[in-house]
Image 1 (spheres, rainbow, N blue to C red):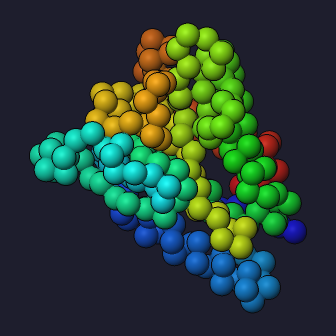
Image 2: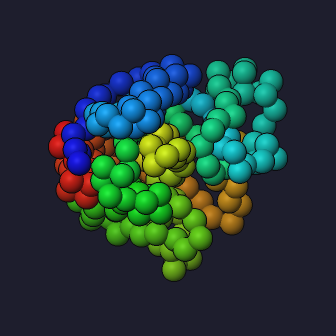
Length: 224
């Protein structure tokens, strides 16, 4: 079993272009698997211009603005093939797309989501932020038992024959105003936060990416 993984930072890239690239790599892995050929895994990091994406289990009612309004604001909108409801991607957010064969990592889908959450939890602990999972909801949360439970990282994946695509959206220096245009992940009784909001200053994205990569190696046993 190989855990060899090619890491690529796609920098600032349109959602559509990144989605197309993901599909390409995803199909490459699936095709290799069908032929019983071992292929490389991929870990992609990027930032997107402002965009809302709606997952398969989502409802358009969670988009609180008209398409016309979004167009005027220069915000894109896509219905996509991952699980989950509506979420936001934009500048100052690190989006991660692991395109990996879970069987190479000896994981099921539930274990995989747990491992993604663990990577974020470990990264946040480096900034002295205690984060955790919230039962019945994917992603990484702060203050789950307190008065203000808030989500700092959304997770939504697609898996076919144990090959994954899509991934996580980790708010670092994100403009949180965009979240007022939606019910994030369909949730109306909890809020969303960012690392900058919690610490009170902007954070170097490259520094966070380095930490994330190191924890992917540690948690998944990846050879990047």
